[in-house]
Length: 382
Image (cartoon, rainbow, N blue to C red; front, side):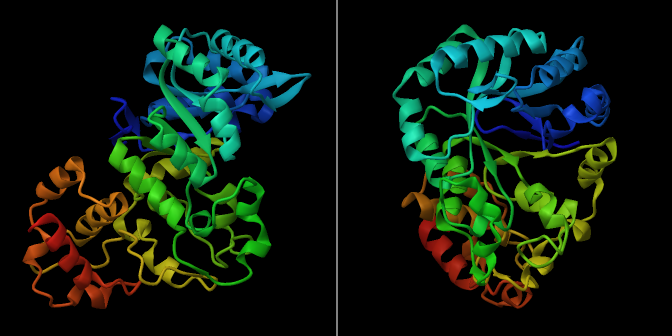
């Protein structure tokens, strides 16, 4: 298993994480089996948004004796009321729900306390300026949560939260179909078939800005919905009109800026192992570029996907990395020091480009690579 930095949190997380959907299966009998499998394969990060006491208690039992082996991302504001899940901003419900969570998990702290499901600007403002944020900050001061996170499906809301400086970790929905959709407050629109009836062209700029801002500010992204609820794995259901593999979906998410781990939904041991197989997959199996280029309903023309099909460069320039740093700087409107440092550490720079255009002939998305190299040289000075 490979591990990545979760932004600037200081946490090292497995790039394949685990969602909690499978914990409830068979009256939670799967919970311990999934946790055992995760530990055996080096998966050290999982998400727990569920507020069902049975699920939380099963997770707590499965964690007993090995709490330190897992980094737990659990949700604040996800509560259980009248026998069902509820998203709450009522501070007394929120407080009671979190204290119950700690007891059910048999722990005195949560590694990442995730403010649950914030998809509207007004909701974010209410949280930021109200009792929920005060409570979350107090939990961190008390050590009951180590880091503050927020989950969202709306890039505009997520960007506001990240820019506030309050959020250290962002849980966000990342996949090649959702990334084309405009920001909105209704998460159901992300998989509404009518939104894919006409051809979609290139990544939504709000989403691109979000990923690059997270990278620049050191906010780690934990990915949900990498498979679009499974739709992207089935040609008859995929909005793209063509199926992707599990490994291709994972690789797409893991090559976005700031992404640290993908919380792979697993309803069985087999599904979890299929996601973990990403770690031993070949470059050919991971390659999503040619599949994307053949999507009948979607075009990524002119947009660098960081897929490295442009390689090899005769002067050994890492074109994908140069382009990524160029885009980060463009998004900021300046060159942040961290971006400059990372650019400087590259063995070869854009100024070494001889404009042979071999890279452009290999690019599946017709990216103007030579122009990008010129811009990077001008911007970074070499």
